[in-house]
Figure 1 (cartoon, rainbow, N blue to C red):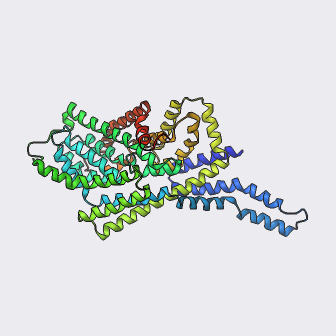
Figure 2: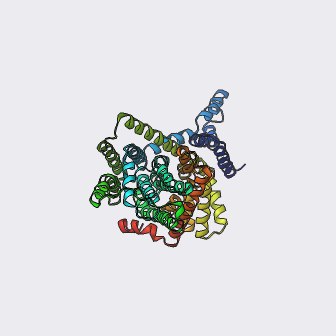
Figure 3: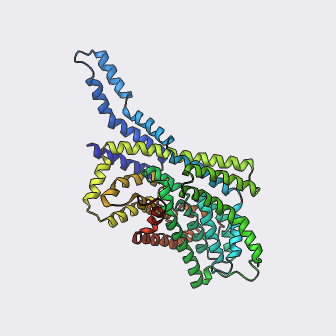
Length: 472
């Protein structure tokens, strides 16, 4: 077999291992080291023998041969890639943002926020759904942790919507879709990981993601309100007295004590990044400290909650970092064997137009979202597309935001719609998994509409980065 064929075999075996359920990070490392040993072995062996003279004895020849077995460049590569990940300044922001999210999740802010928004929007069609969606968007932005948002909002908002006679599927879809917004709207962990994988500025990525994120939230709200008007049975109006009448002054005070602190924390973190007042890592540190202050202010901070937040932060960060180590090792060997070159030649030979390439790439990422988590797709598979972008004149910033939008679907699409499974795990027995899936489908359509708007009007992505930082 030629080296490029070995590279394709390596990729095929990895995909097979993924479907068999092997741990992805350690599978990447094992296959990278295993195939890397093959890739570098012959080169190191012949160079070792070239250093031997013609009159070398059998002992010297034997020790040289044995030494070539254990002295392989793949081990140097693996150590260097591990060091590269550990010294990556962009990734330093990951544990800090995660810690901020886990602290905010445990600060009992969300229940007060949801209650306030429910009262404030009681005259809007589908008011409970609107309040749940806005709460999800704000909370998801603060945490960026899909499972935490869906689970907490499922415990908080779903019972109230069901009690208000909302359709099971409609209520479930709102929570599942709203809970995924944190991987798109800054400060997003996913965008940090994409920046580390692609070399695109995280500051420009954050600026580029704002308008698409708000556009998607707007589409979700239009769907919720519009369907509540056209089909009132899915979201009945609250009965008289079901939602208390609150004087305007008191309502303003409720908003100030529930909505403003969290919004201020998010805006302080984002603003310091977008206006160049702090690096993403420094802003993440500010956010983590702000989360602790909020938890103390709401009298929700305990030693147990702090311990849980630290543990979950370390666990999730370790997963991301080991994925990077494995992916860097795997991709380096894959490239050395000529795998990237043969894929580039194949795609170039298809004579695709840029829009056709974008559709093909997004379709592949959409399908990968069924068996894989977003982190695995960003770290492992997106780098395969990045070298192809110059061939089609696609800006990696634009591509990254398209991918972030696309990955919303990975949490909403059966059979591996993780948001649906998170919600089913805590939903009342009468809410069936098929109903949750059915409720997610209209929101999937909104994601595709948003992607179409981005392609038709690219300035949705580029306007803010160019306004703040000029043309790239």
